[in-house]
Amino acid sequence: MAAQPTRPEHGDHETAPVMDVSPFKPSLVKAVFRDVTPMHVSRSAAWAAASVTRTVLTEIIDGARRAAAEGARKKLVPGDLVSAIDRNVELEVGGTWYDHSPTFKGLTGVLYDAEGVVVPSRQRGRSPRPSAVAGAHRFEAGVRKLLWSQGVTAVPAMVRDLDGIASVFLTDLARAAAMVVREGGGERFGTVTLVMSGEPAPPPFLTDPLRARSARRGDRRTIGRDDILAATTIQLFGGNLRQRALTEAREATQNTSAG
Image 1 (cartoon, rainbow, N blue to C red):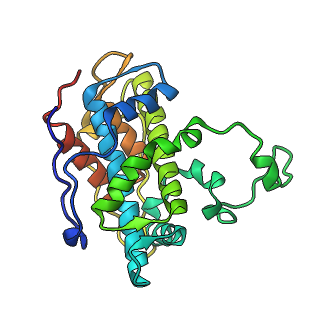
Image 2 (cartoon, helix red, strand yellow; image 1 turned 135 degrees about the vertical axis):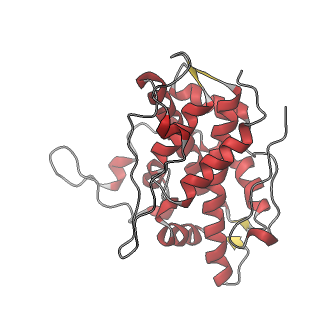
Image 3 (spheres, one colour; image 1 turned 180 degrees about the vertical axis):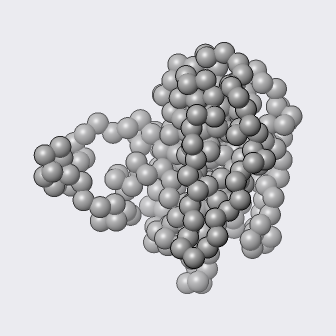
């Protein structure tokens, strides 16, 4: 199997070690997809999904690293994660995890039932846990490799949160990819671009081949690389993170067979 390409440097990443292989193995990706759909996942799709997940987690860790650096620390704590998300709303992914993490307790709003009554926090824990939350520990090894690649370590609670976010994000990506396959392509799914107040809107994504396709290629039983790319445009609402995730996923799969 061909080694995956080196992640392009950006920001102040030049002092951090750079990984040339995704820490999230295709076997892990396929296991997550099996929890969501019986569809076959091609080899290139698994590498693409692993690459997208790596890109997202790397950006989150980098944001937390910057927050920790302001306090002259190299060991990340949950507060650094909150700071990273506060500073860059693009990093607010894997939202299902927030209801299960003490880090985000009190930050996710009040939960109401169908009658409009506030649900006490003790009742929320009684509902069945999503598989993405129950299986978050599977991502620990990959998360620790990403932390090392950024030249930092993290307290156990921070590792747990990164595990959970990675697991929920990849599960959501799997659901979106399965939907793309069922619906016949990415063209019908619109995208939302975040524009900050006072800033001009970014140019349209005209160069993205997903926007130019008239219909999905392939059968309705296999999730392919392009389905992962389409799912990425659904899960990441715009901006630099989505563009980087798409670019790196394409690079990661350019020499990978489709089987």
